[in-house]
Length: 177
Image 1 (cartoon, rainbow, N blue to C red):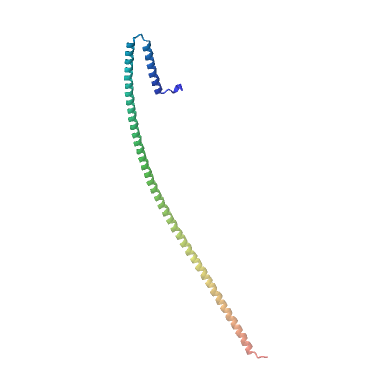
Image 2: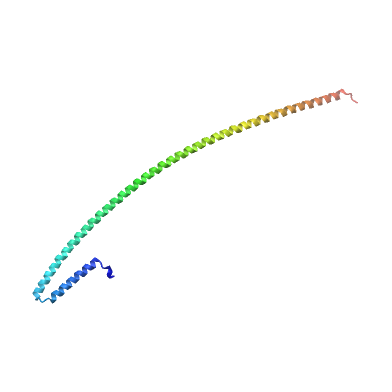
């Protein structure tokens, strides 16, 4: 705790020591009472002037420190406002840049989607035409096959009809037993 002496304690100790030392010196000095009282009055007056001087110095220092604190506070406030303003500008610029980038990417993606859609539509149209062509070819082949089968069936029916008619005629022309 002895290491932790502050200025206030030091000044109080110095003042008390000075007063005690002066008092002891005056008491043991070989002077008369009247001279001693005069010396004490003179010492008290000097102490009063010194204390007044110290008071004035303390007021000047306090005023200087107050002004310095006010100036430093104003400077710090100004720096904080400037920094805040700069950060706001940076954020606004970054936001604009990001918005521009997003718009460009969106436009690019939209273009890519449009191109892919067109390609897909072309592929679908091509496949549709190919399937239609294949279906028409199959339908023609089936139709041809049906026509051939129909003609063959018609011939068979005609042949069968003729055979039946011939048989019927043969039975009609033969005498009955």
